[in-house]
Image 1 (cartoon, helix red, strand yellow):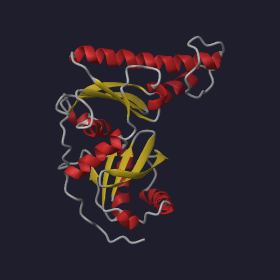
Image 2 (cartoon, helix red, strand yellow):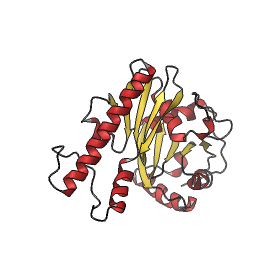
Image 3 (cartoon, helix red, strand yellow):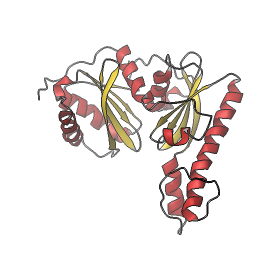
Image 4 (cartoon, one colour):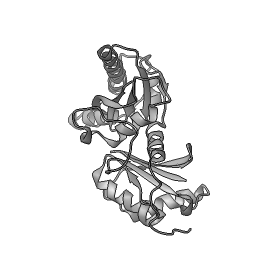
Amino acid sequence: MLLAIDAGNSNIVFALFDGDRQLVRWRLSTNPDRTSDEYAVWLTQLMQLRGYAPRVVTGAIVASVVPGATEHLRRLCQDHFGRAPLVIGDPGVELGIKAVVDRPAEVGADRLCNAAGVAGLYPLPAVVIDFGTATNFDMVDRDGNYCGGVIAPGVNLSLDALHHAAAKLPRIEVARPPKVIGRDTISCMQSGVYWGYIGLIEGVVGRLRDEIGVPLTRIATGGMARLFAGATASIDHVDGEVTLRGLQRIYMRNATPNVTADVTS
C-alpha cells in the first residue's frame, strides 16, 4: 500500500492507497517542530485502529509546503515504515506534468499535485479552487500542465485578521448567513466573509475565463469547498481528493522507492 502525505500550512493529511483506491485518511494540525517519532506514535495507532499494521506500507510519497516539516516526514517514512519516500521537488521525481511558469522552482508542491490530480479526469483547461490557508486558483492548461494562477488570503486567515485588528470584532465561525444584510455584528461579519469570498470566486473565475478565451472546468477542493460551492454557479465540481490523487498518480509514474529497513508490527 502507498502512504501519501500532503503537508499544508494548516493541516497535514495522511492517506493509504491500495492501487488507485484510497482506503482511509487522517488529518493532523501542522507543527513544523513535530518530530518523526511523534508522527509515528500518532499515525501507527490510528492505522492499527483501522486494522492496518505498519508493514502494509510498501511505498511513500510526500508533498510539503512547510520546509520545517519536510525532513521530519521523510524520516517518518524511512525510520518507521522502512520506505524512502518520493518527495515532490526532489531531483528525479517525474511529475507527468510541467510547470509552465516563469519560475517553476517556486511553485508549491500542492499546486503541482492539484494539476496532476485533475488531468485525465476533467475536461481541460481547468482551474482548481483550493480552500486552504490561502485560497489558491490553480490553472491547468489543455495539455494538463500547471500554468499559473492566483493566490488570495484564505477564509480563516481573513477572519483572524479581522479579529486581531479590530478590538470589538469577535472570532466567528464561517457559515452561510440567511441574508446578505446583517442585523448584528456577527451576522455582518459572516456576511462579509461568506459573500465576500463568493464574490472573489466569481470575479476571479470570470476573469480567468475571459483571459484564456475558452470554456474552463471549475473544480473546488479543500476543507470549505462544499460550503461555498452551493452558493455559486462558478464551481462545476467539488472534489476533496484532488491533491491526494495527484500524489498517487505521481507515485505510480515513478519507480518504487527503495526499502531502507525491515519493519514489522
